[in-house]
View (cartoon, rainbow, N blue to C red):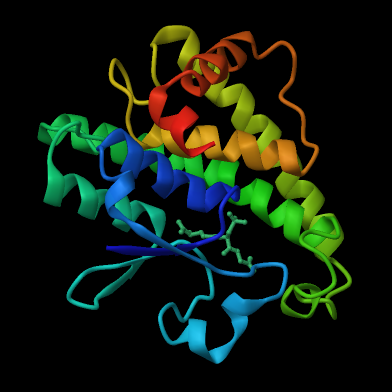
Length: 214
Ligand code: GTS
């Protein structure tokens, strides 16, 4: 297997943690993509992922799989324990639900804020970020506020249970963790009153998988 990604970036981190959780990290060849240089927007990369995002998994038969959710589900289905996407139909549904919320209420809004309301990854990428649209900064700022509301939501969740989707660590935890990392990049602080979220972040940072890939 190969993974096209950029080390240290939030979405690549999601797949790297999943690989490490499943003991697969050492079996993967990582191909570095130059994000600030906009390599992912050039024809050669768009041929493997038309959406121009990393990470992308390439299977040994040549198949390309993008989207962290799809990649994590593939790894879970193909390689078994530990399961990151749930075991029973009910667990799978709850992990899926919470994972969707982790993306829509935290990780994605932070990404929009970072790329559209701040200099983001620099001048090389700005031509791909709707520079002609005057409203993009205000729109991005609203996404930042949405992400902070998402932090409060996950704080409430984590006051009731040890992990985002319940009793077990799952891909929903990975995505919230990566979303908070992204928030740190973008200087969006976790509110100090979100004590359960902050404690959970410290706990997840201690996992061997997270330490392995950080
Ligand atoms: N939904 C995608 C997934 O789950 O893989 C999101 C992937 C994504 O947005 N990746 C970012 C990217 O390639 C990398 S990261 O900086 O967010 O980690 N962005 C390219 C761009 O130009 O926005």
